[in-house]
Image (cartoon, rainbow, N blue to C red):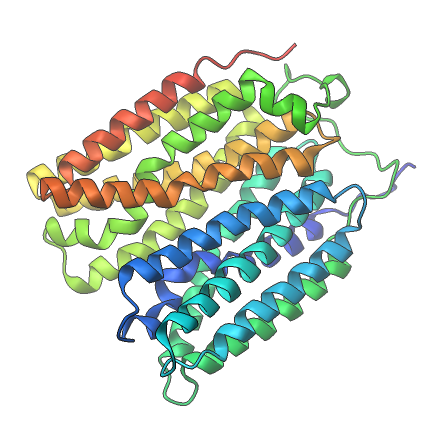
Length: 410
C-alpha cells in the first residue's frame, strides 16, 4: 500500500502521553507520604513495595510480550487500564487505622503486583506500537517515549503531591483520582495507539548512511536472543552503567545536604534529576539514529564513568556547584542507558519479535533498586557517600568495558 501522506507523528504523541501517566509508578517516593506516618510502616516495608512494583512491572512487560502476536494492542491496553484502575482504587480504600500487617499486604498486592503488572502491559504495548511507526527513527521514537515515562514521576507525581496534601482532597481521594485518570487515559490509548496497516511504506533512514537496511537484519526468537553474546553484553552494560544513576536518584537529597545545600534545594534536586533523566533518554535516542550502537554506547559509557567521579569530587571538596553537576550527569547518563535496550532489541535482534525481546531487556531494571540499597549499606558502613560513588564508578567502568566488546552482527 502506497501512502499519499504518511501521518505518524500524532501516534508518537499519544504514546508519550500514555507513558507519562504510566510513569506514575516511579513517583513512589511521593505517593508513600501518607503511609510514612503510620506506626509500624517503616522505611523497610515501604521500600520493599517499590522493589515489588519494579519486579512485577518487568513480569507484566514479559507477559505482554508473550501474548503480543496472539492479542491486539487494544486488548492489552484495556487490560492495563483495568489493572491500574483496580490497583490504585484498592490503595485508596486502605484503612490506615486498621491492622498494620494486613494493610501492608494489601498495599503490596494492589500497588506492587496489580499496578506493577498493569504498567508493564502499557509500557511494552505502547513502545512496541510506536516503534512500529518509526523504523527509520527507532532511537528518536524510543527516546521520546522513554522521556515521557521518566518524567511521569516529576510531572504527574507533583500534581498528586499537591492534591494529597490538600485539606479538601487528601490522599485517599488522590489515589482514587489517579485510578480514574489512569483508567481513562489507557482506555483512550486503546483506540489511538495502533500498529501501522500492513504494507505501509516508511521513509528510508537518512542519517546513518552505513546502517544496514531493516530487511537485512536477522529476526531472533527470544530463546535465540538470550543465548546470544550481544544480549548478555548489552544487558550487563545497561545494568552497570545505570547503577550510579539509581543511587543518585535515591540519595540526591542527602548528597546535596552534605555539600552545603539548603533543605529546600535538596528536595528540589529530585525534580531536576527527573528532568535530566528524561532529557538523557531523548538525547541518546537521537544519537542512536546518527551513530552506530557501539559508538553511542561508548559516549554513554564515558558519561556514566565520569558522573559518579564528579560526585566524589563534590563531596571531597564540599562543592555545591560540583554536586549539582555530578548528580545531573548521573541522572542524564541513567536516562541514556535506558534507551539502549530498545534500540538493541530492534536493531540487533530484528523487528519481528520486538515486543517479547524488549520485555526480556526490561528485566535489567530489577537490579536498580538493589543497587540503591547496596549503596545505602556502604554509606552506613563508611559514614559517607564518597566511597559509595567510587565503588559505583568502578561498576560503571566494568559495564563500559563489557559494552565495548560488542561486535557488529552478521
